[in-house]
Image 1 (tube, rainbow, N blue to C red):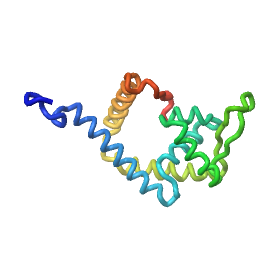
Image 2 (image 1 turned 90 degrees about the horizontal axis):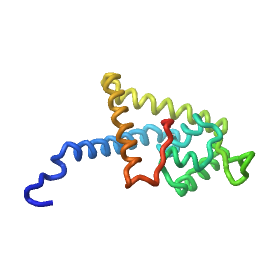
Image 3 (image 1 turned 45 degrees about the vertical axis):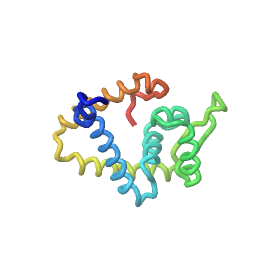
Image 4 (image 1 turned 30 degrees about the horizontal axis):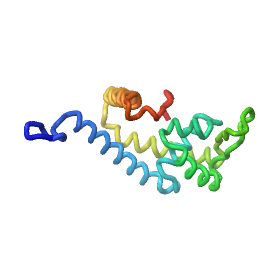
Length: 163
């Protein structure tokens, strides 16, 4: 940076980047506090919601949807399995693949957690017109696609299904 360049925080794109990052951080903190009575954290909720929506998904597919590495899955899944929230079952066609399914307890906890998350979202965004929410979601989807197609993110994948 030289004397003729503006500081990065003076640039609208930098400001947008920081605002998105701060909003994400605050949302994760708020969600973590809201989920604490259920003894789960946001990463657990991400897993529960995806297993609720996509019963029988493989560990690899789940990691890809959540944009996390297999090591993250290797840490969280055994904890959740031990707690009785999910089961890992061998794939009928390929015994090397493990399929994930919620237990009855996991399904019930997922439903409670989704209600908590939905209430938090509603409280947070209720003053924002639906059109603005849709526009924000569309802009974030574009940002996600740009980032995933950039050279810095070539090794990450995302499913078109949100969740």
